[in-house]
Length: 116
Image (cartoon, rainbow, N blue to C red; front, side, top):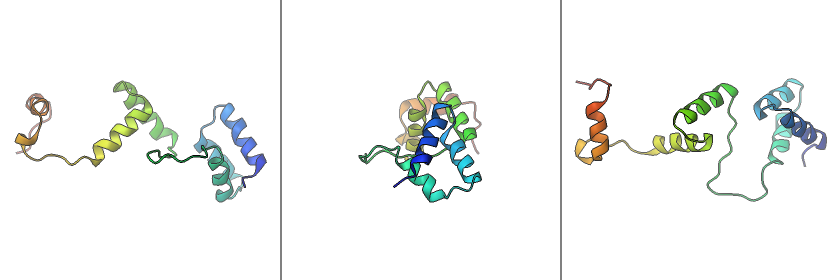
């Protein structure tokens, strides 16, 4: 059972615009046990489980980089993260014959130098 005072503190800090990482760091610096902090944050998660949902904590620097990349690609933050994960799981094709025609055109007109 999470500490009610801790849950209340997290709610108030979120209302003031602090990120979960900032709140977590402040609590750890003030000698709150990590397991009690985790319990409090878990209490904010929905009670039902979704199989294809993942919750991650990102520091502010990484979050800013992802937000800039998402804006550049005209995606939401969640879509950008999903795109990065999807691309990292796809096996790269090795032969030109297997590539799509669009990919072939991109490689022809790419600014990157071909490896010899």
